[in-house]
Image 1 (cartoon, rainbow, N blue to C red):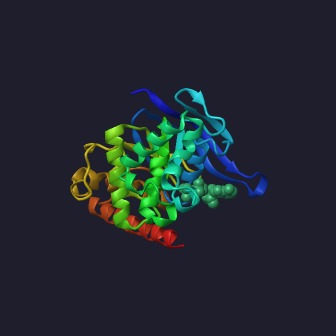
Image 2: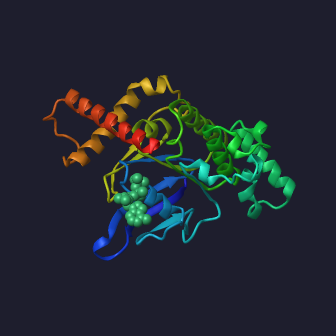
Image 3: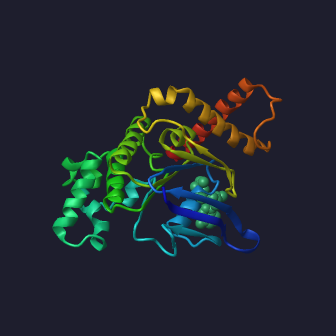
Length: 293
Ligand code: ADP
């Protein structure tokens, strides 16, 4: 598959002088067309900074971002972003269909064509019946589905998702994860999704890039060897899934506790699994604290 996104030696520092903060330190990776790549890393490690640099929302201090061969300077026309905070990204004064149509005004000529495209995107996410409603009349999960429809409606070359399911309850989160997998299977799209949830990164990704604590560096680039058709119960219970999440938790735990890279066999495998489980539990607690803030 051709390369869709190339990030090369990306560095981003906030501010200058003694108060400067290095958020991202020399990141390089590529994402192929039609791939769903997840970026997982602890809170505050620089994931959103990386995504904002890729989206052209902030200019990186150093390094480059190219989207299908074109250098990114400013927000590319054929890129869409879904943020965690759906309530702030939808326009309350526009209907659901109006929200999905909005970004199409510069991309699709003709009102009827824009309307048809918006309705198609709403059908993909199962919200065609809610087209005439307003965002505030919908549940949080439905509003995030509108955000996804709006992003997909413009048929972007790259869809960036920043913790897209972190603000909804666990049941809705599982439904939205499955919706993303289904839409991708049925319509194809290149997605880069950041999350601090290790399980989510494995469940959704074709590939998981694991980031270190701030300043973000890539500590592993792992292929997710699971079938495209996934299921919340059987996939999450499979040994491939469990092994991978344990491996990622161990990598993040090692980086946090200052141990270097993979262990050399001196520690017992079950101790490692236990440490990984504890790490996962601590990360989940931190995540739920953040979402209730
Ligand atoms: P993540 O998305 O992984 O939680 P962020 O990219 O939001 O991490 O932040 C990475 C680091 O950069 C954090 O230490 C954060 O405090 C810092 N940071 C983020 N935005 C700014 C900003 N506008 N100015 C200064 N520091 C920032």
